[in-house]
Image 1 (spheres, rainbow, N blue to C red):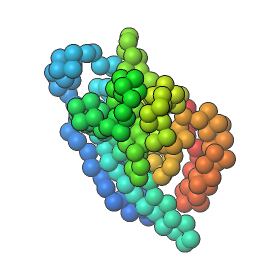
Image 2: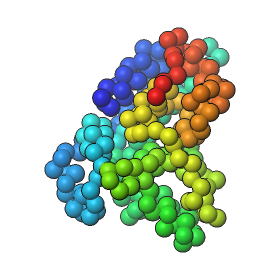
Image 3: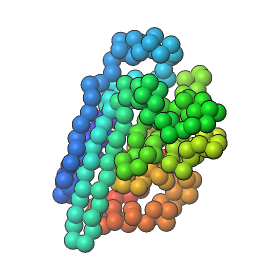
Image 4: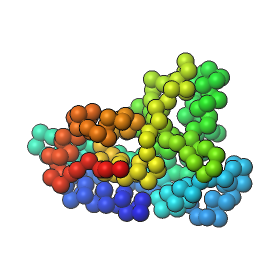
Length: 209
């Protein structure tokens, strides 16, 4: 399912005349490999982990599209399973700019799902007990000073998140709005840039969840 969504997005972009600048992925994660990593991390991962990373383990796709006076670009920068854990914890990427101990302890509970290209913002996943999880938007403005307590929660499941970002072709800027309730009601008002998607793709409609 996930691979089909990503591939369909690229096919539509190419049909519209977009240039695919990057199209990279990593080997998928098998059930056996997941078990080894569970033992290494001393935890049990939710079902969605194998479902996602068993189909599409990490993905970097960048594109640009120019027609007349309109210029659009976008990306999907999902971390592979290894990067999600290693860069979030061992390499400290998620919290390297945080210096208050209480903030660091809270943000350490998050893992990077997607890095937003162009700035130091992230979409993170926080694992919870009983096979549950939550998605968050970690923007540059939330670093330190108690920011870890006020991180905006994204009201989507992993499956919904993938459908939304591929439905919007990963257009630049879209990830900064996914935590806003109003965005799902009036996406064009919240992010007027989406009007250009309508012009580039005549059959474009905002994805529903």
